[in-house]
Length: 466
Image 1 (cartoon, one colour):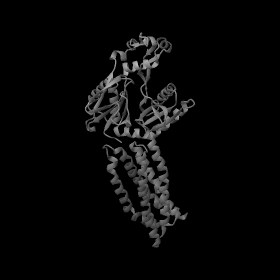
Image 2 (image 1 turned 180 degrees about the vertical axis):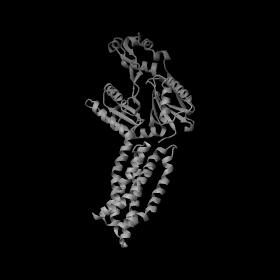
Image 3 (image 1 turned 135 degrees about the vertical axis):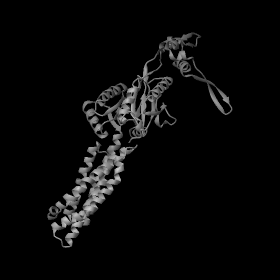
Image 4 (image 1 turned 180 degrees about the horizontal axis):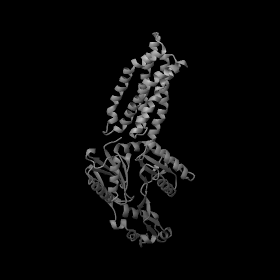
């Protein structure tokens, strides 16, 4: 559904400081505001007030407000997104995902991932997970229709590791706890007292200057006091290093996971998900204890289509039963039911001519279309039967019945088609949901009406004889 705005999710390198992340976000906003199609930009950086949508400070949601399409210099939203990507690529070290505000929330609700398609890889060893995720990422971005492909990068944050030398500590009579207290006071800060201001209490924290917290060599020069009075440097009893560690450890249902995600443009979501699943299953072999789970918007589509595979046969069966109780004739019931494939021809043709996919909205349109098409068949067959009951011969009854029911059948089809015409031609926000449904109904009514008027009377005698 077209929401009239764009949400750009930006991810910087893990371990970036809050100041640098905010500065990059402001730079992104300035670049987006240079585009003539953009009316405003708002960024949300890091974790919000509620913990239901936790985000690191290296992540930001950039809400892009757009001007009316009449003021755009591009023809479609896909061209606008491509143009935005070219502008934002001027900022190095940042990955982007283009979506819409409500669509992003829907994706997150369905699968916990803010993209159309997500590949969740579960396992125990982080290095093995990263290796599998990299192979899946390279494979996924080669699938036709893939856009904004990203691999979750959680490593790369600088950490301070202090590894005690237990033999050296024993020589001076020190304990590991002594090193822990020193490092805690130097890096994190240690509460030594409280300041009371009325009913409020504030902790008084002692912490070393910033130079000791950012430079390992300075931290090694911090002194400890041994029980014998000796002044011992931290570097003499411990090894201080600054390796790279994880920014976040993602888990789902208690299992460690890494996510590869992408959006889909230029093709249907269900077809893309099917192709991607087939390629990953064929080319990616997983070690024992590792498995892949798929998520995204296509899950919603699969559930809806699964219900439709049940609803559609039930609807046709119900129509079949009601027709039989109306005419008490199996051949005439099947004759009227021929209007269903008549309607399918026009509905599918309308989708093809307008370049639309057979989605959930179009499928619902087919159900509505079947009802109107069957109604026209009932009107035609009932009139022919009435004329035959009045004593008219079969050939004359068929010709007269078709002639007499020409206006009612055309009126029924015309009223329904005109009623759906504004929906079929709509271009406003949200019309993507309406257009397939209306196109199916209009196209199906055109084909079913013409076939009802010409083929149904001609097939009447053939079905009656059987």
